[in-house]
Image (tube, rainbow, N blue to C red; front, side, top):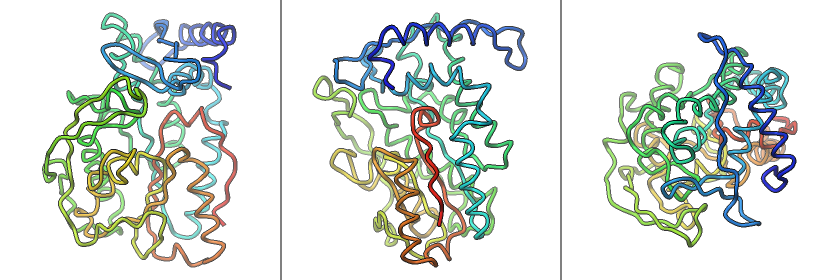
Length: 336
């Protein structure tokens, strides 16, 4: 249900969230400060966009996640998301494949200054507790997680586009570097041509002007485009399973700056930066609007046709927007 369209339900929800936050006792403190209100008004009746401060735009479902997930913290261990991820990891483990989870942090958490003024920022940062609870629970269940929250929040760069729901091209290169480092440290059996590669420093920089998916025709923005070095093995094989040892699956965060058109550019997405460092191109199964059910469904159907499809895979990296922990249906989709 979209609470942003129902003010009465939202009033009740906000009161519940603030009440929970006021009575929560996080480690290292006695009582948490009440969370400040966030902007709730969408730019139009049929919009999914909330307009923040200083030209920043945000997805309404992301703000819904920050609000509703606060109430879900005590039940995270029994949440559909945690249960389904554990089952999927176990199914992959049974055939010798390791699962790595890489939730993309909420733009509204990383750039909370685009939602509230500076005086409210210290308390507003408490909104990250909800997603942190999911990550902690998954880690407790031996799910390998690439935790991007600290890595991105400590940067002085914008990290996200102002008018688009995705991170900037520079951040795509940076995330690729974190993936390479994580694989090199945790999975020595996965071949990497250049384990110390720094995709951000190896990219060529130009400029690109975009109309983001949140602002529509209201605003444009100019970004630094960080394009990966050309590589003979970087041919995009979206949706095709090869003998690559790595499969990336997820949502549009794997497609932005790689697919062109509404994904803004080519040659500058996560997979583009990974390819030169790895020495080969990882396979990609991704869906713009659904990184939870759609990729797993495609993989299930492909495995029905070819049971040996994953015989060369050592690692599956599952990338999706963190808001989907609470804002997406986590229906069971079997591996095979």
